[in-house]
Image (cartoon, rainbow, N blue to C red; front, side, top):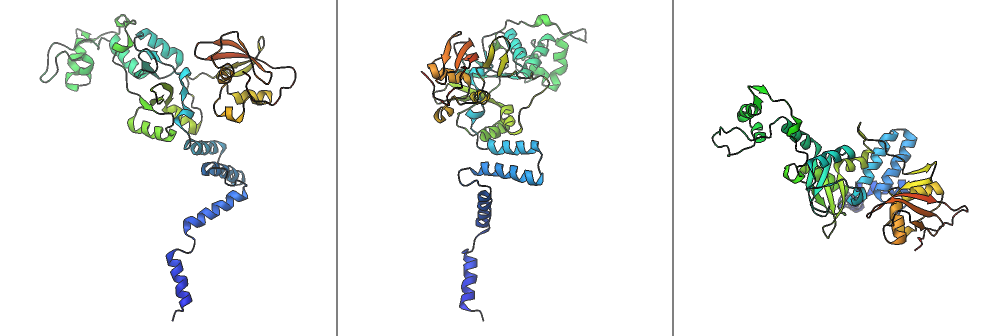
Length: 366
């Protein structure tokens, strides 16, 4: 016979009084966190990243590249769109009434493959143009395929259909090609057919973009881009203003690191020693990079949450975008001379470091 105590033990086991598998795993993880001295101040993602690095040191299981990608993936899961976007001031875009020639020149100068188009200001976006679509359109224009289709009309075909539309239809292809040929021979490309002054708005090249809020998780945007096959998003604030831009490449680079192709130019140093001017920095240079270079802090803990770049630091000191030639003094004694600026942002700064070691004071002077 089975004793009452044994029955009680069995009942306790069945009722779940003993630790579950999840509870056991949780306890095991907490022991690892404690052994590594992580405690509760780190998130689970941060703890996993530390654990991966510690384990890799011992086992050599992962290469440095794999560790960087795994860490990037863990960090990406906690990122928001406004943390990975290109800020408004750095967006390459074009107004819809600018010319075809302006568009081609902008593609050549910027090296990007997609350009947003807008009406009057970036706060009224109209879509984007992909360089592949522009190239196809130009190819059709110079070959004469953008002319009207032949007058011979097939049953069910809308009157005045474009030859470009006919080319998409196998049955109408021969007629469309014949319309652009002479005596059956293919027409030679003729660049004189291109009117470089035509406004972008009439070219019918624009494609849709996504519109997302700054607080949207970056992972959600990546999934949405994959689902819609729209690889550019404009970040729009609660008032409808454009805050920034995100492409699918921006998102993937958060995981795998910078992706550079044969057309990407190596970015110049954002902070450098100029033989003539001394220490010079881009307005886009991170504040922390200059802090590391000079060995002290410019920002308080509260300011670090709001200010990322030297241009933003200078703006916070004077409360506006300073003009070229202005000398802005930080409370630490460091002075920022504005070498180049436009009405929207500071582009280039000369940094004057005081001869005596600056105080460790991140408070900005007014």
